[in-house]
Image (cartoon, one colour):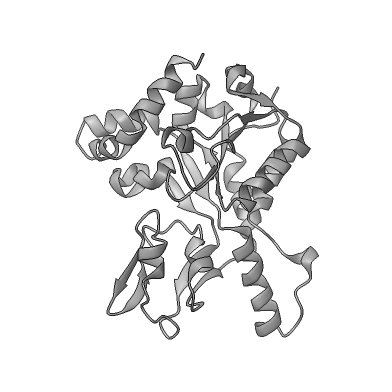
Length: 282
């Protein structure tokens, strides 16, 4: 039988935007922040395919050399690092967000992976411990399904799973229609600041290529509403954008691109995440 707390989450999932707005109310918001978001630090990773294309373009055009596959850095290497170094890897049977939202576009059976010693406290009815190889295979399937990875310390997960936040590292694979963090524009600035784009990358619009077709805001709208059409050109609100780079893939004119501002972006992300949770602890 489904545990009480998972039934509660499923029933209240559609109210998340209303609850998010409550975080802007003095006192109530601060209480919610401490209870559900205290100590959070989450990074949204750009899609691997976009990062690979960005590096190939730079090496062939800017440096006039052919990109070697072995030298290409991809965002998912951040997750692979923690998967390989973790003592425990717990794979959920399903994605709580997609199953709660009855997702019609992406598979609900591709669940989160949790690392850290407290995964041994998670109800075994909700998933299972897996090997490094199984975890990496699962994440590959998530990327092939078009999902975007998040990694970091997420107190909401520790609350509903009954663990300590410092002993649980979350790895989510999110769709644009059901992701819990679609509520980011609705929460207070302090909470919103705990979920960021990957260090060393940003998404840019080349106004000279943009024709204002609206594909990025109408046909495939940004899940955080970071993209607007102004004066017949696409414009990105960099304060809202979290760099998932979905829009890069769908722009029919190639006007949107991922810009790598620091080529140590993978190492930077690993260095930021490592102090949050000791995934090697027994």
